[in-house]
Amino acid sequence: MSEGSVRRTDLRNIAIIAHVDHGKTTLVDAMLKQAGTFKAHEATADRMMDKLDQERERGITIMAKNTGILLGPPGPDQVRVNIVDTPGHADFGGEVERTLHMVDGVLLLVDAAEGPLPQTRFVLKKALGLKLVPIVVINKVDRADARPAEVLQKVYDLFIDLGADEHQLDFPVIYAVARDGWAVRGPAMGAVPEVALLPAATQQHGKLDLGPLFDTIVEAIPPPEDCSNEPLQILVNAIDYDDYVGRLALGRVHAGKVEKKLEVVRLSDGAPDKGKVVGVYLFEGMKRIEVERARAGDLICIAGLQDVVPGDTIVTPEGAGALPRISVGEPTLAMIFSVNDGPFAGRDGKYVTSRHLRDRLRRELRGNVSIRVEDTDTPDKFKVLGRGELQLAVLIEAMRRESYEMCVSRPEVVVKEIEGAKKEPLEGLVVNIPETAVGPVTELVGKRGGRMVNMDATISGWTTVEYEIPTRGLIGFLGTFRTITRGEGQMSTFLKDWVPFLGNIEARASGAMISTDLGKTTPYAIFNLQPRGVMFVGPGEEVYEGMVVGEHARDNDLDINIIREKKLTNVRAAGRDENIILTPAKRMRLEEAMEWIDMDELIEVTPTAIRIRKRGLKPHDRPKKKKVEDEEE
Image 1 (cartoon, rainbow, N blue to C red):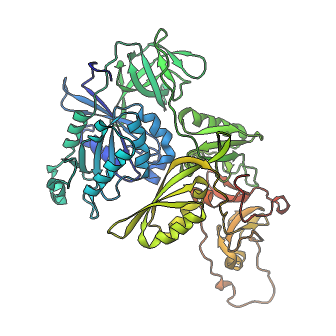
Image 2 (cartoon, helix red, strand yellow):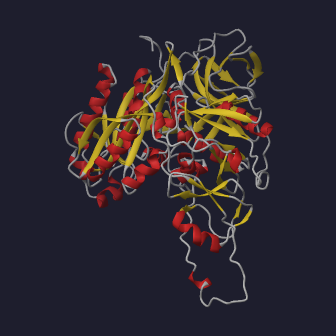
């Protein structure tokens, strides 16, 4: 903002950034309820901002979403606060980067026990680089293992490490319990105020609320500059859809005014495209409120431009030029999406052809700035590039639920050529594990080309360890990590650098058990094959030749007949059939299958099933399994 400029005192734009599971969505719920957004009789649900099925199932925010609250009674002193709920996982960094361009400040939410974790660092670095004003909220101060004073010191250290200027370092501090809906102001350094340690019964009687947080937002977050008299400029940050008015462009009015029936021009990478605004909407609670006009500083939706994509600038015909397009981090992983050519193709899916796949992936590009799609030499295969396994898994699961059917390959790292040399991505890996697991986890990381950088032990018997590891080493890492830590360990990653090739990494240690026939599995065959390994299918399931039905106990692949039945004779074996006891099959979820499969295998994804198969279904079509694959080639 320029010195002496006129500012909109009736408006604040903020984003809430936090690591996964630090209470970000819960805090937004409490803010919406206490700001009087809902009427007394209006029913509300928990985690209202998590609209997508996958967000509720996974417990994470995938898509950034906008909402708004009104603080104070109606009148000239009322302040509208636009809130953007951003993802906390680095795989959805594209969502974070585009939404931070819409706001003037951020609420940095940090767990009072865990402190700032890698995704916190990733998002905060972006926010500080955009010169956004921060407010630090230390959440969950009622935890038994809370250490708010230490966590606040770590937050300061993080700000300094990320190059924050003196104004950003002078941030206000709020201590809160978002679940119970209260917050108190705290000193910049030192222990939590005594009021924050009141017993839970007192908190529930309504003596504490989020008022201090609301006051701090109004006081600390700078109001946007009022450039309403300048030529119109709207930077489109996201895309939504409405059944009545069609495609909606979400963005911030950087300058000028926009109203219904206004003639506008969309500036993109191609030729300018003329259009007309047919609807203007503001955000209030979980709804979009239609208004006659909006002006500089507002976060809005506009309808009427059917070809608009994120990064476009909307101006008037005689207006200003385009704003800088949104830039996002480079993708680090790629997968091949192909048409399902297996024996069961077309049984479950509604969209099964290459045309369907291409159209759906192109449609994803229109709203997701961090996904890339490239054609391959084969017309029915498409290379999809993303930031991480989770982002790609979310896309595949979304397509599956939309009745698409396809095959996907094992994730591979993206290699960049920098100054004539091929380089691969290097990740920062931070784990929070029991101290007894430090040795085994460090050994696992070492086998995958990583090394320890830092270790910080806590009094409670948990240890935070930071490693550097190539992205290749993280493919299939999570499953083994969970086994070593008995499901208790937490891990986070962030892209650190691009480095020269770091050598070979061990491939999957175990082989696959592959069906040799088409038919239904039998209890008799499974019972006799159980000593050979872990089965992925149970009795009575349909299998086909080339389908992977289990994990072999040894490192070689094994062809098996899993549909074999017991031969019938005229001699009865008393009690023999009753002795068949089957171990429950290991059911592979999509993410587990992505981690487990090898380069010569594919995942067959349908609306009702996840199967693993060999690329070549016939034995003579399969290459001999290698123990160590040469990733450089």
